[in-house]
Image 1: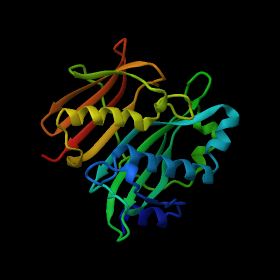
Image 2: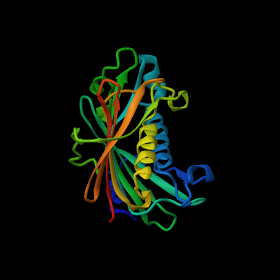
Image 3: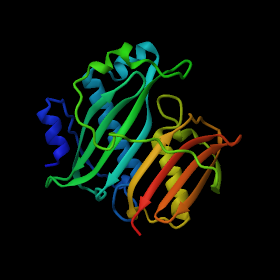
Image 4: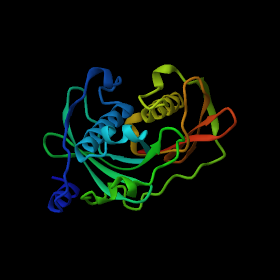
Length: 253
């Protein structure tokens, strides 16, 4: 059993541990789960746990607010395979006035660690898109657990020396229930572009992503990248050149 989970349980933290089965439509030719689908599993686990803890959609909708992912870092041992049943262990790990963090550990049925992730989230006002003060939502009173990757997790810094891979118009199918592009779609687009540039997805060992601005249906965006030895940085920009999303992957060479 992973030590992070043991520490969290010893601290009396309410850990949510849903099981997921990897479906055929979530896999690529390698018969392993696609990273955007893995993120969707994590997002579903986080959303369900937030409801159980009393600060999910049912609490936020009446005050015209919703959670947004701000920063995510994943370290991977291996990706779950087609038809594999695995568990995501997740718990809140800290909170401040604006940002709340949540941890994830993926485990196979033999108790082996598949991946570890740290994430940072904000609650945004649906009307003016301004982050809300979490202290006024009583979120800081949660019984939090230990951090994994969230401990000291720094945000990526935008770069300026990218090469454009492609330009695209945001389709309706990318829009989620909050009215903007879902966070997994950014990863979907950038990974597709990087694969066309020669990236082998199975070589990814860590991935960090940050979200800088919302994207909406019919927006025109460009996908850009640069490579430095065993690190690849990908970015999405709008028509005015504003950086909207940033992703860094470290690969095994």
